[in-house]
Image (cartoon, rainbow, N blue to C red; front, side, top):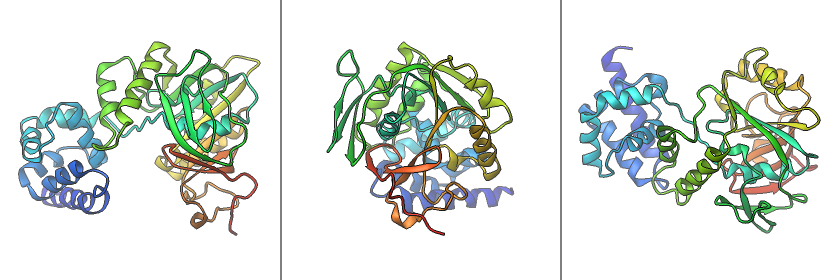
Length: 330
């Protein structure tokens, strides 16, 4: 792309973010995006970032990870002074929202599976959603649950309506696969994950930090790889111990995979003797058969083996059980 065109594209991308995505969620990110959109010296730094890594939440998180100040003018000066470090770090990172609260949405589905279970997550990041048995849960209109040892350092608060009996799973093996897995014991990876929540999102940083401690104390098996490639997920699934129920989860993963890859992955999952639990948007093309009526769903779809069972917040803040009454179209 020509330099002038690249500059215009960056300015427009960050202007859209400042006007349409950041307001009401993060005033800090809105102001930073405006600075990128109007200051040529800041824009020039962002043009040097690979186009596939220019997402505002990713770049902003990396600046915070590297120690950038919050004040917009100071932040802009920091970006210019640390351009090389910023471009280098962003170029090797990707958005990896490893939100342990998603376990609060997964738990009702996990509760329908007879244990003990082997848990395998696709798109696992640092594996924070591989510990549903180690966290405490406080559901509005639902149960309060704690691990056998007492209240967990990670307490997940969520709204629940109509779910079946919910219980902690008996997880005896946990593993994950990711294009770029992160290590809960690595200081840089911890800084990155705790920088991903937007400024002003109360409680998320503390929750992620506590979950990182849980994962660091008993690390899961994490494999670097592309689960859409032939044989990759089957090879990892074969490592699960015999005599247990294998559960494969894909929370929020499919929207980030091109259609051909989604089809390949679903085909691979169908050939594995496992329960498949996923969280996906109702409007995801080719995901639901028959297609869902997206207008009838407020959030994302929690599904078991492709069968929608609940309307959930994509990050786990709410669960509305809808098994047996999932509106479809067609």
